[in-house]
Amino acid sequence: MIACARTVNAMLDQMGIMQQVRKSDLRHGDQLLVATENSVYSMCVHEDSTFSVSGGWFDSQGLSPVRLSVAGCTWGGSAIKQDIVAACGLRMEFGNRVVTTRIREVRVFRGNGLDRPRFSRVDVGALFRACYGSGTDGA
Image (cartoon, one colour):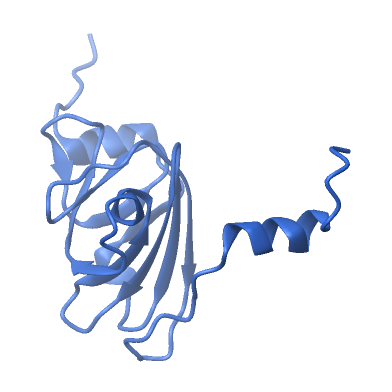
């Protein structure tokens, strides 16, 4: 019988998670876009390893952008992988205990050492019109 380790690190190693972002890989000014099952989060890394976070739950609560830490990633339970900011298939847990739905995709954009985000808010209606035109023919 093969014994399986029951630690978060061992489970991640056994799963072979391909797309993950480690805290140690990020630099001041880097930007992350994290798409979960229900939301998209835009995150900017600060010098003190905190993040300016917009999107998802924070937008729905009128708190964006908010500056906070990322506790790590979980499967939704109490086991947490603290050295990972985001990993596909896992849930991201912020320092204020907000836990996202499962992460579908993560993108890192290397920054220039600035604290100001390179992404800006876009009006959803304007974005829709830019992508699909201003007609309302339902096609």
